[in-house]
Length: 102
Image (cartoon, rainbow, N blue to C red; front, side, top):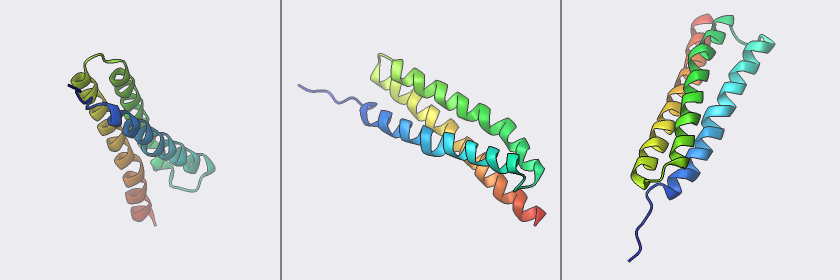
């Protein structure tokens, strides 16, 4: 009898989410602020977005280390939720601030 690990494929998605929805948007917004291509108030979004990305990375790392597959699945999902929240905050907030300023 073979049991399925619910966290096996979720680990791949968590890594992809961390890269494409965590690291890239945070770096992109930081570069926009540093180069001055966006209103300075967009930099305030980094204060909330970067800790959310870091919390997502921490939760994903705990999901990789968890021995119980169900606990690992919960941690991976929580990490991806943190990263999705950071993505909405950084990119959505940037768009809203730019629309109000321009």
